[in-house]
Image 1 (cartoon, rainbow, N blue to C red):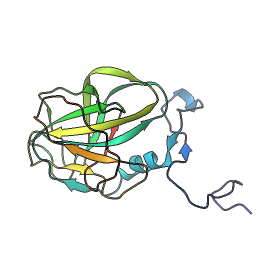
Image 2: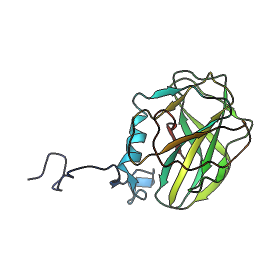
Image 3: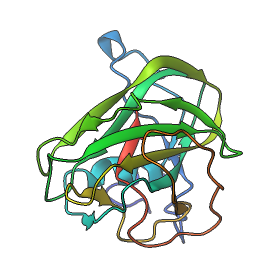
Length: 191
């Protein structure tokens, strides 16, 4: 017997977060398919933007990053990041790293002043980048310690998070993480 929300499909005994669903890409008239499949874990991050998150007090120059799955080849123009409970004052840089940790795109290296508290801020890359299907890492770097970056505060498989010290405004590769560490991964998504 199907459940109220299963639409005749059997329910999963143990959801893993790796299950996939289509995501609306604003295709005219809702043409299908909307996009390649996105994992339920990735959808949880997108939905979480409407809820609470933890604030991260940054160390000037350090990068805070998490993995993101790109389901199909697409052109990205930047990273949206959720500003925590304190905005303004500090400058932020957004970076995109490939699966090896190499830096493949960045916003302006002088940084952009962090936005208003508890809002999403778009940090545009210096040039659009076309990426293939695969694992990437979104990173946020700050030049100060006042503005807070909203971060993942609950482990959601298959996310991994990390941080690396550095010098603000100087691009550098990261070491791809293999584990989840609480309060390191920014609430951020490429766009």
